[in-house]
Image (spheres, rainbow, N blue to C red):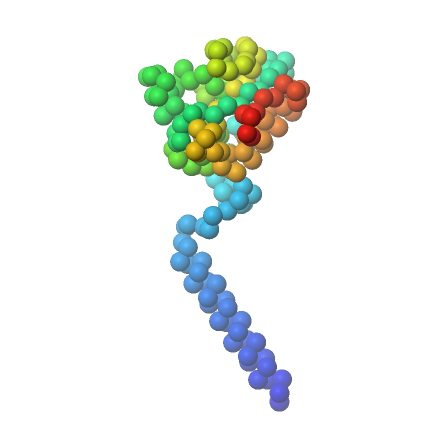
Length: 181
């Protein structure tokens, strides 16, 4: 007879704990707790790297030989906002191939390919950055000082670089990150 009261207590504890867990999940609603870069629910909302790398035009294997990652110098943004800050009327003239957002302007870790990438056009060299006509330029939305890249941006950036490195056989010594990456 001592078994039944113990089973009843275990059952009652199980019901209470499941009820409390369900109440907490319902209270969170569609706002999951802050998660690291490997939260599966966040990855379901982002395009796979292979789809991001694809472009509208042919991509010869020897077209690109270098990757440069740099900070936008802004605390928030996306392709359209960066274009506007550069004084451009549309996003076609932005001087990079990809923009990785930080959640302030587009989803955290979202990779936005630019029109320059879609058409496989070269960047315009400038004094501020290294690069040539064969450089893939990736912009990270961050000022690099007060607004540092999120873990999600860094993980997605690394995944993008890895995908580009494999697809175009870019040597590791030809991949340039910001000093504090």
